[in-house]
Image (cartoon, rainbow, N blue to C red; front, side, top):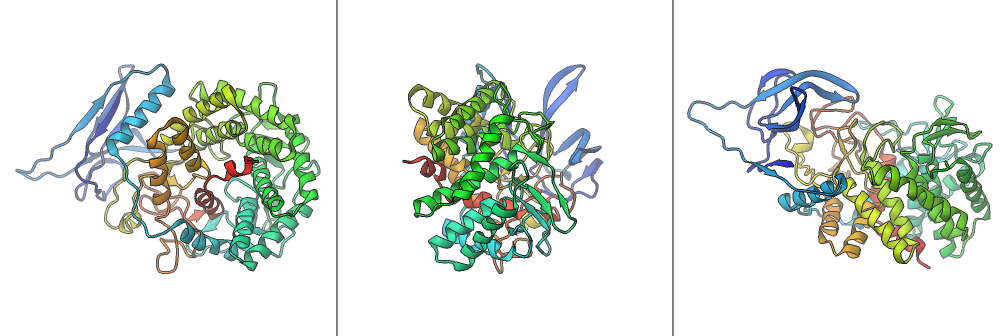
Amino acid sequence: MTVVRRAEYIQDALSTHKEGEVILSGTTSLGFTGFENLDGTAALAFGFPYKEAPKTYIRKLTLAPSVTAFQLLKKGESISLTWEIHEGKGEDFAEFVSHTWEYCYDTFQPKPVETDYTPDYTKEILSHFFIESFVGDRPLNYNSGVHMRTDDCQNTGSAEVGFVGRVLLNAFNAWEYGWKNNRADLKENAAKVFDTYLVNGFSPAGFFKEFVDYRTGYEETVFSIWRQSEGIYAIFHYLDFEKRNGRKHPEWEAKVRKMLDVFLQLQNPEGSFPRKFKDDLSIVDKSGGSTPSATLPLVMGYKYFKDKRYLESAKRTAEYLEKELISKSDYFSSTLDANCEDKEASLYAATATYYLALVSQGKEREHYTGLTKKAAYFALSWYYLWDVPFAPGQMLGDIGLKTRGWGNVSVENNHIDVFIFEFASILNWLSKEYSEPRFSQFAEVISTSMRQLLPYEGHLCGVAKCGYYPEVVQHTNWDYGKNGKGYYNDIFAPGWTVASLWELFSPGRAEQFFRK
């Protein structure tokens, strides 16, 4: 069963209090939907205006007193509200989610956001980040993109290979863009990143030094399969680009092979990878939620080195994903900063099986394609199909942000962001595989909507520098730590937002990599 309120208008109003019973300062279109405990029985509850009880969730792992809002109606005034209740059947929860998404898509019919920013122009603006953020006076050269203030965007001492830093993927994007657009500055900086990481960027066991803070001297000694995999992924794209252009890097190839061989040692018998581990391969966090991140470099390693051991390892990850995540519809704890259901888990699962489908044939390909479709529906369920209203005076509303096409983050972190990477390419691929136009249509909604906050001179959208794309976009009563609805958190990580959007506007990268 699903319930949808069909609002004729989209607007919100500020309230004078955050808890208790409050009368709004104006008209809102925000209602509520949730589960309620009625004498031990779970009930689906909905109403208008908004209500959050028995507690409000105002910040990560932080509860506050309940709130019930009232909209003022003067004598003689009235308001008409319409809810649509829809019942359906499905063989399992996965089928329910897919049918519900299709029903909601058809109900709201989201359209692409009108924008003057072409993909090429967006990349041109984002490329400012590659120059402004470059740090070239440390043992590791890097693009500074984590733990940064939105009000000054000053470089920090943190160099992070993957996750929110994405140093190596940004280096590759700058390298490729520099060659295609005759940008010597980009090529020079990117080369320094690759060269310094090759010499100074590895642990004794051969893992990437995945997080180093040069201001404090701190270096992370607990490694993650997530960051390590994303680092290898970036290097494979670099090596493939170089090989296609007649250049080879045997030292990098040796480093990557060594890491993949250690991956084979880390893999558990059932196919999963531990979430965190140390240089001696001792396990710190055995959770398998990050496993799909390892599938990508393993499949790429099979293609690049023609080593079937890596493909067999990747297939075992898919067996684990199918058994523990996809068949159970339980996409959990893939990321490093949340222990819950999250968007990234289903998105990475879809990407992992997509990669395997690209290198498979016949029934096996058909099977992986089906798994990709199942996981993709769960990932899609995190992306908004409608526009969240903002009150006058809230920055995001005042600059006209439309939330359709943006993804909510996780159960713990209730904001929206531009985490997309290759997912739009996957949606377009699935659209062709299954003759399902909704997938490609929504990929276009995502593509256009995620250009809205592009920061350029005269349109910085609340950040201090051109090309530093916002990260924590707060669209509800919840906030990450500062500023509340309609604004950003004061700290952000443009390292990953720039990398994500760059991949969005570089469609079909995986298909090109695996093409003979």
